[in-house]
Length: 505
Ligand code: SF4
Image 1 (cartoon, rainbow, N blue to C red):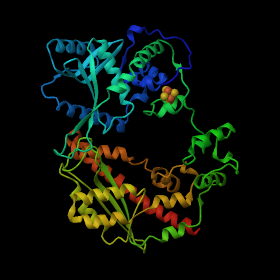
Image 2 (image 1 turned 90 degrees about the vertical axis):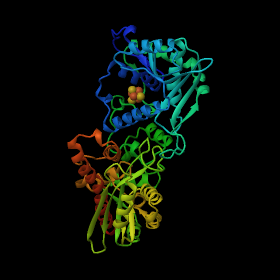
Image 3 (image 1 turned 90 degrees about the horizontal axis):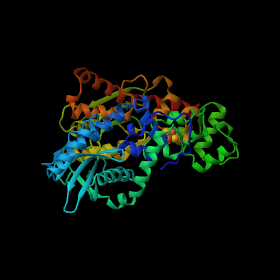
Image 4 (image 1 turned 135 degrees about the vertical axis):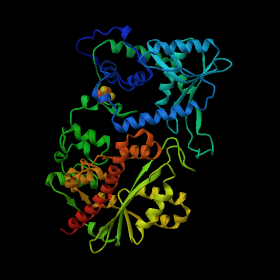
């Protein structure tokens, strides 16, 4: 919970009557009063408009919520229109009076807080509040989320005997091995928060009646969720800020700040840094890429032909194909650029299509693409290894080749991390940070699809929910996704060349 340090500026004319909390506002207020203030007083702030990636997560949550309702056949569903919440509250009251035993989206408004309970079920001595989450486990932030609902239900006069979190079951395998959902009793955690909910709700209401509160930015800005207003509260960092140092500890960061040091080049040479951080400091001071001995030998260890491999995957919350679990990874696309010793390059790519299981097609095409490769090279190879294992499991005919490839995949990332530092890496060895520094002409910015999360969201729509796409998108998306995946391995080829040149320079 956040402390409000002070209240400044003119008080707003908004009356207590026109202010109200909801479950999501309340939990935002638990993270930070300042964030809640903006969310209530500036609901149309540009920062609150979800980008495509966040919208995909919201849509996934809605799909899981709708699927969860099927677990309660015969339940009474309260039609919820957030512009007419009083109508939903009234409909809930009538459903209870009529003797409904299970109510979906049961709506209540008490203590200036509106909540719509995913599932409210009658028991002998009271009611069970069930919150549905599109996750595979209970997370700490789920407890206050459910607690505020239980609080409001009780204030409405219904005794709450139990609070449950219903989430996806990791043991489920599509289509019908084990239940899709499982439930956890979170009543003890909710009970512990009972008094805090009342106090916090009052504090939030008082705060909202005043002007924007001052809250110091800190660890709470990213926990449990990244605050959308980070840029409003934090001044932009200078170039080569000490915060960029690779895996710098909070203790060391504090020591540097105490000395008034803001940028990497200001760090004294006797300050203890690890090898990567030291290279970072040296690269910034010399304003050039640092290469340490051993790079040439590391690259020379790869035998030609070298197949540069990259996968794209989808992780449907609700599994679609046989044997898949909730959020299970499914490789649906790959790109392979193969570099021969004489410098020739060939390219293979594959993108699954249609609603059928994509894994056999991906596996078969990949076996062909890797045929003859002496080395399979990836960036951050644990992901590619996992994908190869998944494909081998689902395609027994190709398993021996795929498993052999998995066991021999080489990783270019640690080679760079251990031998190279460019001043523009900014402490990161993500391909998205390394490429702009070493290959400025191969930026991802010009691509229509420019990050993996977005690619995954589009791929899932293309393969599982084609009906959501316009005819234009159905035509354009496969090309955009091909371009993105192809770029990932094209940059590896160029990166390999740049590293070879740097190693002998
Ligand atoms: S950036 Fe931090 S301090 Fe500012 S509103 Fe968000 S959580 Fe609060």
